[in-house]
Length: 168
Length: 101
Figure (tube, rainbow over the protein chains, first blue to last red):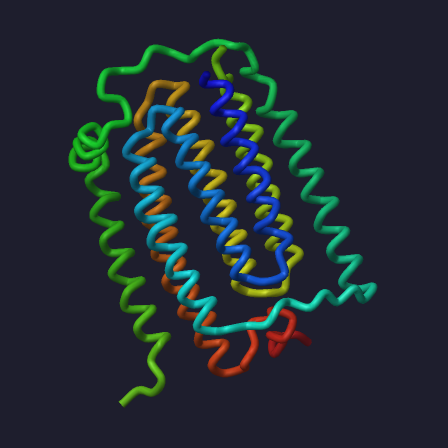
């Protein structure tokens, strides 16, 4: 059952990820990226990461992608025209070839080390729940948690400054 | 039948390389940005998979921080793209060549 769910979700994630990269219009790419994030959220549930699943759906697919869609529809761009000039084609082929080499390296290094059908160790009770994440965030990871609030404040100020039309 | 760790890692590597191809190939700044988000999601999947197979919550906490930093990065990056569009009427990164010699 877990294998069936994994194969289905992984197929959806892989196909939608591929469609994100090859679309001509930015709006369709954003839609496929939302589908990709949704399928990854399903994989997080399979991996007993319930808090991460909720945050992925709420924050990533629900806030970040909505912000993307706002900007895409605000800019109202036409489709990206395909310039098959020889310089562009060489660049695209070189990038694709080197990326496939990277994929081969990654798969060879980490892909078959743990390919046995073991279920993994027995998990601690409360693994992946909100309570466990909350307790860790306020005890062991308190300093990064506070620094994250500073990062978000800096991002808010930066976005406001960049979006202003004129300073008076 | 259980899913091994390597299956999650191969899927994560595949999504990461798709993001790399998108960043290196596309010319639209918004699509490049979305491919960066695809790469971040692939790494999040790796973290959560390792967290489950090593019985350690550190991976999921790190995913929380990656998502927070990604939120901040998307906010500022989209503001930069909007500012570029306001000045140059394009988001084509091939047109942004003022610093090119």
